[in-house]
View 1 (spheres, rainbow, N blue to C red):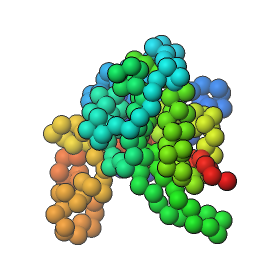
View 2 (tube, rainbow, N blue to C red; view 1 turned 60 degrees about the vertical axis):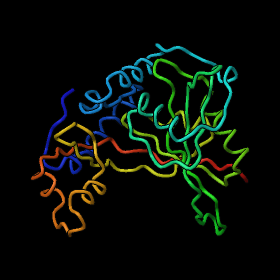
View 3 (cartoon, rainbow, N blue to C red; view 1 turned 120 degrees about the horizontal axis):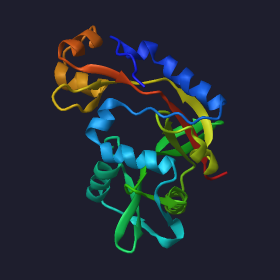
Length: 240
């Protein structure tokens, strides 16, 4: 499927969501594989597609041991096995099959927010992924249980990427849908094909100057706008 390249793709990105919804109503799972993702990490893309088709090496979570890992271990694993860039994580966990790291999950620092008139200690599940070519059955559930037991959050929130996910996996783990997020615009670096966040890119290139038209500024620099299909925001209430 070839998607249109327009000056501002986010303005017309709702058609991606509508297309996905149409397929979902017909019982068809639709995913979007973007050219930059394929160009940067083709083996990760292939592994995710094969996992969706059930062509994966399955490991049962009970065969693994959960323990804390370092930021170095986390980032190296994500670089090798995840499509998105690493984030600044406070809590980092891994599942080990003997001495081999086969899955990771990372969580944010706590955010104190008000829910139903009470202060709530909320954390974000930032990243989760399996080793390429493998699926740890019950792996995320095991890591979540370990995190909840150790840190005792009031709730955990996370985002399901609609390019790949319909959120069903989160719902099986007890997460509740809180919001449907609109498509996000990113920019492709013309030098290396990397996908960049607009806000961060403007800070780096603008050097503190006020930029009145961010789109025109980045287009002039040769960056290509792309978008995703949005995301689904989920929350899991842990302590009730």
